[in-house]
Image (cartoon, rainbow, N blue to C red; front, side, top):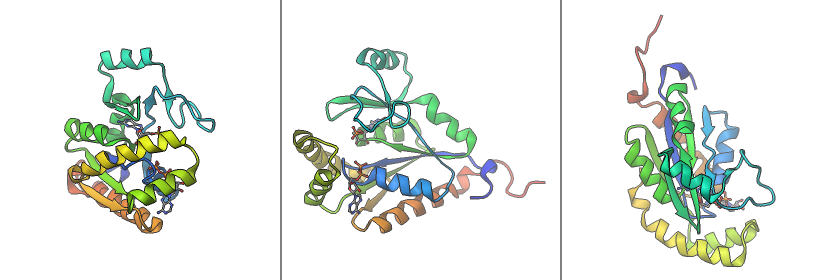
Amino acid sequence: MSNKLCRKGYLLVISSPSGGGKTTIYNALLAKGEPFNFSVSLTTRPPRPTEIDGVHYRFVSDEEFTHLVDKNEFAEWAFVHGHRYGTLRDSIEKAFIDGVIMILEIDVQGALQIKENYPQDSVLVFIAPPSIEETERRLRARETNTPEDIVLRIKNAIDEIANAHQFDYLVINDDLQMAISDVSCIARAEYLKKCRFLGEIWED
Ligand code: ADP
Ligand code: 5GP
């Protein structure tokens, strides 16, 4: 994208039920070379074998998480599937100055907190899988969750889908390439909004 330095960045919040395709779509967007940055969340969940601290999440103890909550360091945080997850203010607010699109891959409760805290500077995209049955099939095929965890995630998916109407955009992830293209178009159009221009369009 051009005019990077003339634009204010914004927060592109992507939510979906677990298995909805957030990570897959995010990885495809990165490969397109747009000015994206990714917010690394903090979580009290234990790391999975393939996860790297500081890359996939910052894995912290319950005590550390509580300390940060008490210091009001989070832009949003929530209990998700039995663990706490949160986004630090400092790590996302620099996106505005840097003129980048900061992607937050977070749950519905967190997304709605971001909308409340950054109404002008956030865009909420809900990715819906084509059906509950297909979500369950994808979660099983992914082989990263136990059968009990999948039952919990499917139960939570029904509540999450019920909140989709509070988002700015709804993308159905049936055909993956179409869903990637939809999110990419949203990200680009939102980046081009005139409210994100800083200063004059024609500069010396
Ligand atoms: P999330 O990050 O939302 O939990 P993932 O991106 O991990 O979801 O996707 C869950 C699984 O479904 C992955 O194995 C992924 O490869 C697969 N998947 C994602 N989108 C599609 C799609 N449109 N069709 C078929 N499989 C998909
Ligand atoms: P997982 O444990 O599978 O990595 O993620 C479980 C859920 O937590 C997903 O729905 C994911 O979007 C959500 N999540 C990840 N990071 C955050 C965060 O910082 N805040 C909130 N509210 N949810 C998050």
